[in-house]
Amino acid sequence: MDCDCEIVMGKTENNIDEDAEFSIPAEPATNDVTLLKAERDDLFERLARATADFQNARKRLETEMEQRIQYSNANLIKSLLPVIDNFERALAVDPNKTGAAGMLKGLQLVHDQWMTVLKSQLVQEIAPQPGDLFDPERHQALMQQADEKYANRGPTVVQLLQKGYMLNDRVLRPAHVAVNKVQG
Image (cartoon, rainbow, N blue to C red; front, side, top):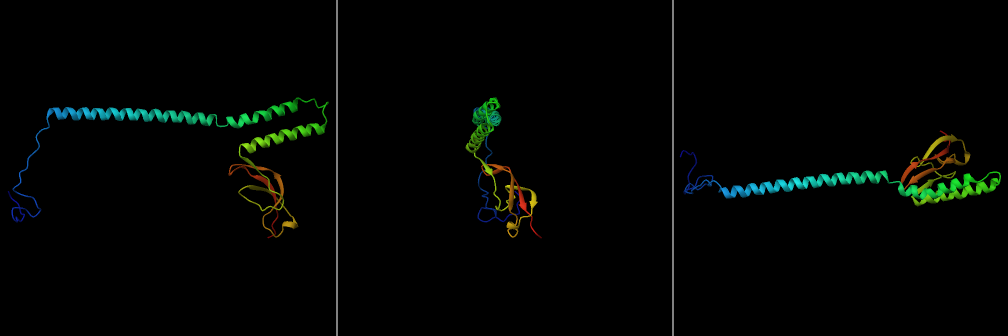
């Protein structure tokens, strides 16, 4: 054996015992190969079943999600049906037999019912009063008006033009307002 290694007490410099006998493992027994193939086949079959189960679960979840989206407004619509019924009753009233005051009172009742339904669905009004500071997150300035009362306050709501609405903490529609004209 040609080796440029230094031999020290029967061992090479890289600590390999030269006296040790090395044996090449014998060919595995045919029985062992059969067992390994069976185990491999079983693992592949289990993997295929797990993959199929995963694909089926994914498809089922996608179908359920589509149905949730499709019917997500069902509760809101159910809660609005009585309001629609009351509007239809109001429209069915003969205007010749009911005075304007009675019609307005009926409309006010339907409006109040509508607002109760919206509140039950966590919808809140955004209705700033004159003198409230302008909030660009919740208000949309449509015009400026000169108003001496708010001259030194910065952007301030002078007039509410149209209410806004929020669902939870998200603005659905900002309140449309007139703000004071800032002198600059």
